[in-house]
Image (cartoon, rainbow, N blue to C red; front, top):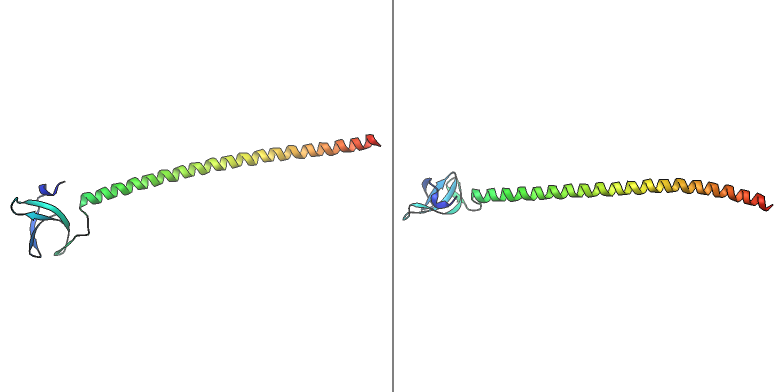
Length: 122
């Protein structure tokens, strides 16, 4: 929305003529009888020049939403990576449990064989 197509109320502020529409203040070009550049937001009888024009605010909101979406995707990716790491850890724990079980069985059989061997050696 360009400032020169905006129609609004002419207002004299601090000795200067401005065009005001929906609280947005624009320089007024009396020769062209149109709005000029955006100045700020009307705040009582003065102009707050620190407030960006509404389209700029909408753009900032859009950028913040994009950043929020990016952050959410990053969070979801981190969750997925953590789930994979947990699954891998669980697989290692299960494998170690199986190995421990078989190691115990082998050690029991080895002790039994050593006893038999000792009896045969007598």
